[in-house]
Length: 365
Length: 137
Image (tube, rainbow over all chains, first blue to last red; front, side):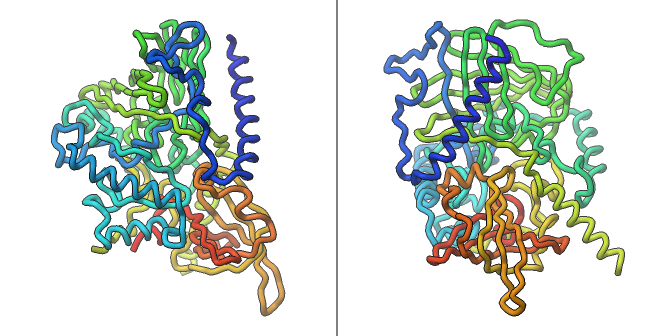
């Protein structure tokens, strides 16, 4: 299959998406419940294979269930990756409360942040305040939410303490230089992150969960796996023949991915990054260097779960390799929507005019 | 126990180890927290665009009879859609009351928090993670 054919799949998917948005407008949210069979190639057997015999990862998946689990482990958990039964039960209560409120918006929860603070005041907030694994449930009318309580204390599973390894000296210098150059208020488009400029969130940023836009779609064909991310509409086309990477002179935000199968696991090795994207929500954090290599593993665990793992290898930025891992799930009724972004990115311009107005006011004084 | 988020903590509230303090549509860079307003108007159209949807309303000045157009910034449509806020939720012609804050440059733009519909039902359309006043106490 050619790359052009992939472009057609993507266009088709966009048309399907637009039609779906119209359809959705006519159906109330409560009525949406696609049967599990709608998920492509979900079979009763415990092995999932495409018609040509490759492991089957196809379908729509989301990292919503890991929303609220911090990337780095809070110190009180030490080397413990998993919650105890009691801790898990407590989190499950909060997750259920949050899910219930988000799915049933009412006058009481029309201000999600205020409702969260009220819940904390009533003592329903858990120990974590407004953020993190122990945060009070956030009801809301537009954010995503975990449907199940994650067992993890952090997204980082290696090193043992669940935190990023120390930065190299070189990375620290890069960081200070970047911070020193930063303006106090935005004046021009390069004052924003690559994400805020609607360019991309990078490989890691496209799957680490944030408040919305955590969906992705996997489409397979003999010799290729394509992953389409909702936000910011990136698609990676991954050959699965273990070929050599592109020449090192070719650099990009999403890098050059090459895959191969190891049993039922898709292993994707990505290099050729352009040094502008970090490993964090929306691609934030310290940008990886040109030498960064990301190794991802996708393993279908059930009808509606894929276990995802990413190893970060960047000796110029971190003093050792580190790994994040979490499951991505298929949810009935969850589909990918178009996320055209640049065309509607008015806030950037509006913030510049805001800055100019402030400067004019200050100059007049 | 009241939790007070320092006003200086703008940005997405996510675990960014580096990034401008005012990052990601930071409220204070675009809108003026000292200019809260309440607008009563009629929806003319809603732009279902990312990264933020925009609700256009016509506001009639009772005293002068003059009509001005306002744009209200709402959250991302991908998020709104999944929570049941659809294109049918705010058809053109709906009379609404908007609570929000005016743009810093004085133009007829506002960041919306609550919208009250004619039947009294409230919809929260605000953006999360921008450091807006409704996220702080």
